[in-house]
Length: 471
Image (cartoon, rainbow, N blue to C red; front, side, top):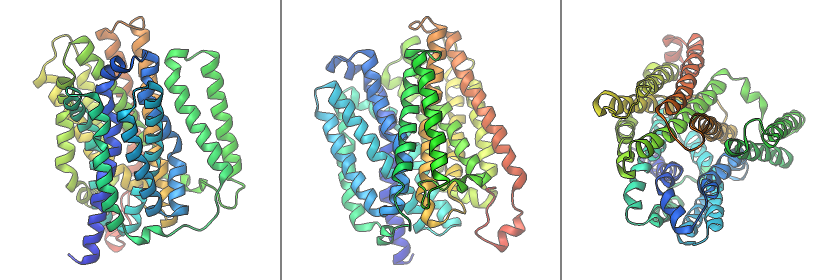
């Protein structure tokens, strides 16, 4: 392996550690919430903001984060944001006030909104498009998926000692990654895209994303048909309309809308909306089922998700090869089918669940879905995109996943509360909530199947190594 190749893979190791941390933070705090509520004296409505604060910062600023990486330099943006992430993690773990904890979580989400697209765009501009980039992306995205899955288990173990360890654990890892990044990240990642700063576009899209995520998080409490919810959604639509109007007339827009003319990019973003949205909602339902209905411990509940996480981690290095051999389109279709199958198995929930008949096979199918779909969607979303727009493509994809998770989770929460008087869970309400994830998975399967019709032939792929089965 040449020194140049070694440095690229060294940089990838650092980027993988950071995306693992980002994903870990999304899922890890969930198990610690009851302990946080008890120690800080938070109400249930305030407690949700420990999670929602992170989602607001992350999902609302991803597009701005991706474009900023393109304009100011990916390496520079990544390093600064990682430093902020470490400081916010430290503050979140030592504060004794709920409002300060929520503020720290919001700042962490903002930092992640800049590290995630910067990291992905460093990979796509460092590794040439083709088998090498596909392998790098498959490892990178598998680390994210593994972090999300294993975060539950790690949090379950740490919370049994002290919930503050759950929030403090990322600090030393982030510091080590920051020191390593200073040495191994390529200086080429400092290169900036041409063009100016579309400040108006940044304000409009950020405001619309923040308001959308805030609205869907609050909708179950305020009511989906309430004046506040409807008014907020109308305001979101108005802001998005004004954003589109502005972008069409800007010389250097924040989002070049022409990127959405690529069918494979649109399908990739819709695919991640469905994958993350349905799974985040399912995970929430499963937590309620295992802990509140069956009385399982937090650690026992977390261990139920281990099969999916282990499967993703073990298969991570092979996904790039699979994408080269079979094309991303086929992998996404198979993944969507596995996702639907996993949810369908969990429709059999009852008061005496079978580990061998439901929990393990259902989780394994969900693991297959993530192992195949998540890397393939990331590869497809940046395929054929120019280097100076890799941050934009990465930001679009990450935004899709975060906003999708918030929207579907809000909808599922509404199903659960309406089915049980707002407090009492029942098998029927839990099953109805899983149906939401199943229907979404089937919609995703239908959307992904349309991509197979435009696939390139094997002969064309052999003639041009940059042409992949992604359209």
